[in-house]
Image (cartoon, rainbow, N blue to C red):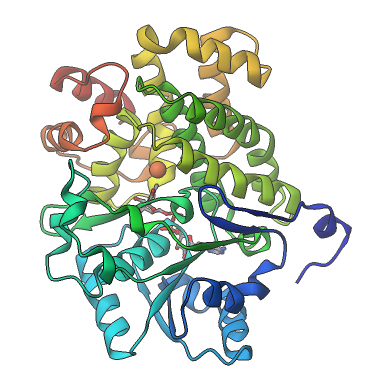
Length: 389
Ligand SMILES: NC(=O)c1ccc[n+]([C@@H]2O[C@H](COP(=O)([O-])OP(=O)(O)OC[C@H]3O[C@@H](n4cnc5c(N)ncnc54)[C@H](O)[C@@H]3O)[C@@H](O)[C@H]2O)c1
Ligand SMILES: [Fe+2]
């Protein structure tokens, strides 16, 4: 554990918006108390294959064991998790007699942990709870288990979200599964957990947070609270993502990025748009990283949306201290990608032989497509995808 002056300088706070958040360096030591606060006695810790062997995971497990909490480990979540991961997680939850979940990791593990808690005791298939209209009311709300969420990346903000992204492995579609009770009961935001993220993951996850803020801010729905949160989230990413990328153990930068990630997710209750609509099929079919894919797509979508968002992006540029109005804002995004070593094109991310017709169709069907400030047509979507390739 880092206990130097830098660690002491990072703010420590308890927030109750949008849920109970324990924010500060070293607060993973409160994991057992967090479980108690959530009413969990026998947690299943859900994490991904990479994280399950890392010291941060062992530390979290040691905290639980040290407090006498009998817990299990499900450490087999894949990136962009699918229904097979979910079935295995539910089997582990049931066979271990668990009563709640500690979702520990990046968006993949957080989402899958939240989905295990949602689905462990339901009778309907998970696809019946897709985020469409009031489908969430189909769930037996009383059967949903509590979740303590512990992010180890700073990007998706899934720790403060009421949805989980699940890939349907048959159709290769990313589906958003939603229920208001999926919001974790307690969140531990311990910036120190993100210190070991490799630079490429720091970059991609950080750009996911920026994409959430920009898409939420640009979406046409009326939600002035989200506007404010999105704007400050952008400022935090602009100031602190290059620092977190360059110096992995800069705790102040890690902490501010952790806040920016949560803010992006709070803001995008207002809506997302074409960046996510295009990136979802690409990452589901071609197995690219979600946030890194967003980063490649983002400048193209900004330019496409210009007629609808120019005035508000100019206000954002002014707030961020960027010269050049709209063009200055787009240049800032392009330069940030370059600073972070993110490829300019999807081919540079490894997307080979794409079936563009299919990607266009899937993007138009994606639930985030409807939030784009300019309605997406098949022609426009094709042009956007081709430009990104
Ligand atoms: N629920 C939501 O609101 C929401 C929003 C955006 C994205 N998502 C979903 O989240 C997923 C992406 O999540 P992500 O970008 O956080 O990536 P991820 O969870 O897939 O993790 C990426 C990699 O980073 C590793 N990693 C994570 N933390 C680490 C650490 N501290 N040290 C070292 N390695 C670490 C993981 O083992 C993994 O290999 C996608 O499935 C995406 O669709 C969900
Ligand atoms: Fe995202």
